[in-house]
Amino acid sequence: QLKIDQSFVRDLNADPEGQVIAETIIYLGHNFGMQVIAEGVETEAQYQLLAHLGCDAFQGYLFAKPAAAESLLGR
Image 1 (cartoon, rainbow, N blue to C red):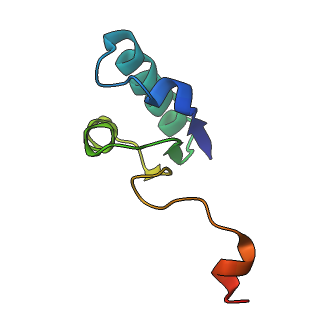
Image 2 (spheres, rainbow, N blue to C red; image 1 turned 90 degrees about the vertical axis):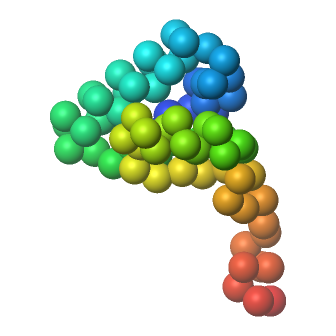
């Protein structure tokens, strides 16, 4: 797995250089046979752009807030 840090994702839609960096990370990851995961995805626009660039998986508040392990296990 290769993760795109949230610092690159945060201003992705407003920063053309950030888009090039994300696209390059995705390209390199795929060429090395890795799954690419974007961290810190908080908006639909970030998700749409990363999906368009070929990102494989996404983490962030757009999908779920952090939760304690106990609450996930039903304890």
